[in-house]
View 1 (cartoon, helix red, strand yellow):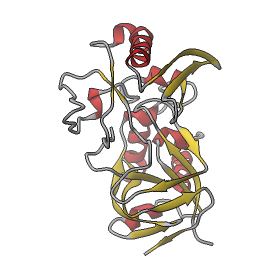
View 2 (cartoon, one colour):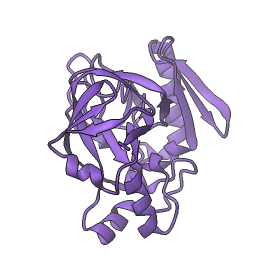
View 3 (spheres, rainbow, N blue to C red):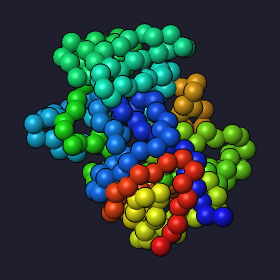
Length: 252
């Protein structure tokens, strides 16, 4: 049996919670639609929406440093632009990211929520066609669930795959098989992707995506057990098309 897509996730706002998708359509040279479309800028280097340039993740609110973000559950509506923020099942803020007042409401919420941990007031940023990815090129991130299971084996504890914040989770692959795909093409549903490189993991994976507890050291466990800190791969879309949960994946 070929590998299949187990889950698809997008992260509309960098550092905030995932949204599961049953289906989506990939476009050539682009990331997953709506993924990392917005970010909360807190860095020294300015971000200019009129002339957007890639900035490192430290310029934004993100789990590697700001683990308390995982206490929140967020949902973004594409048509209205409304971001709804919940904590413990209760709505604590909402506002349209398409409107200045709505952005201000969200900025003020995160300023209060993060408190003294912030260096400056966060600014909600977006630029047409820009993606706030951890890498400069627009990529789709892929992880094999069998690799996560192998991390569980050495960690001796359950590891939630959402710690790795991948766009596509695959089932039916041997552990670490995705590393052998670097430089090769994948037929995923109706799209074709080329695997570019392995993903080196950071301290964001140490944060439980449900409890927000920094309760593991995944990079160290990877290094100790396997001699590297990598898990998952980045792939570029070379031919667009629709993909969905349950679609088979073939390696060329």
